[in-house]
Image 1 (spheres, protein in one colour):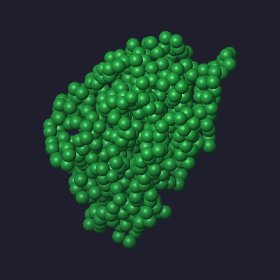
Image 2 (tube, protein in one colour; image 1 turned 120 degrees about the vertical axis):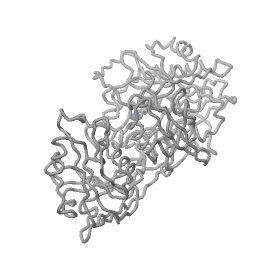
Image 3 (cartoon, helix red, strand yellow; image 1 turned 90 degrees about the vertical axis):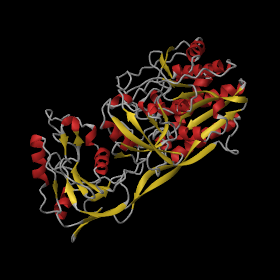
Image 4 (tube, helix red, strand yellow; image 1 turned 120 degrees about the horizontal axis):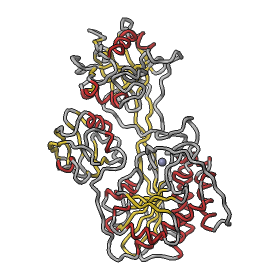
Length: 590
Ligand SMILES: [Zn+2]
């Protein structure tokens, strides 16, 4: 499962096994043991271990006699944006003095490439926060200027700060600062860690990670060390200014270079990596039931990791070797006792980086997507505790709660069947394509997205029961001769909607190509302001009010500037034609 803010409850894992393991249980164990072994390198994007895991799944599908849907192959390959490569020309030059990556500057991973020559304006923390009555850009024109700003926000360690003191607000992120700079028509951004809160050690600037799907922010953006800054602009008194701002939370923005122009170059290229879904078919009639699980995980702790120690292998035994193992065993059972429908067994890649694999499959579906009767997603099914189990997405078809109840008769799990089809895993892409979905999930635990999500903590006894529950569910769906009654929810997803003051209700397409400028929508929530404004799936949003939308981060930034009841012009492209409409923001539905 991808980035999911859980309230973690500490649980003790205690397992007493009395009965002998069933063949199902020992098969599940074998698969999880393979996939969650250190050799698979945490199934991170771009690792050899991920490809070997894909091959392992394909080999199992072949052994079981599943049909390969892609011209004789089980693999559905595609390219995704992944990491950046630095070029040799990253540089900031002021008169005779310069700095490069070996002497105190470094592009941020989301920086645009390019060269600009412009004056430099210091804009404090680079923050415009009307809710805190604070604006570093007040009375300061930065049109066509390079802005220099501090990391963080005023009053970083001060719990009485008008900002949130020890906790950063969203204004403190570098993304937010870049969006704000762009909104104010700055042409580039330099960021320095303020001396007030910095440690005393040598300043080291992190090289952009090779394992992040960075999105271009729209302007060149570089970090600079205090030492390099002092060399380039010896007259400039950074510490004094920061103290002044923090003493009374009043901005102290100022022009740094009056007449001297500074030339800044960000030299970097965005890379792509080849990934693949692994899909097998059990042929039947034209209607289809999809059973899926993602097989990728967080590698050595890529973005999304919650591990306190960076760099450790994240084996992801529960997330989601467990789901993949179940899918393989469901295939085995359905091969020996087939149902009339075609069953698609789909294991997805790139789930942890934004549901990329399932999005690709839904858009490039080898069968008729409109004949998909239901999609069942297994993501984290190996840690049943106290016999409790969740089936989410239950409200996405009228028949589901009855089907689950029947399926569970012989299993006896304490099943909670609830929720619409929105959620942070692959079923959501099928739900957005108006297919009924179910999401099998054994619950949150303290090892979620940590290096401790290991094989030994899986409860295989209960996992076998979950696998049976999923099989029974497939058979239960098969009993209906007519399509299930799809229910589209008007509720917002459990995460996200409440984070912003203003509710818009757009559903971004997480698999949007990194090179596409704008925010591509895969849909809008029914009853939302976005829907009222006439937006729909496929629209490419390019502007909201004054904010130019280069990517999803700009949209998040734009939404933060509105309150319920505010309105804004939204510009978007539909089939190449530019359109605009007025949107009135609402409050997130309860
Ligand atoms: Zn996950």
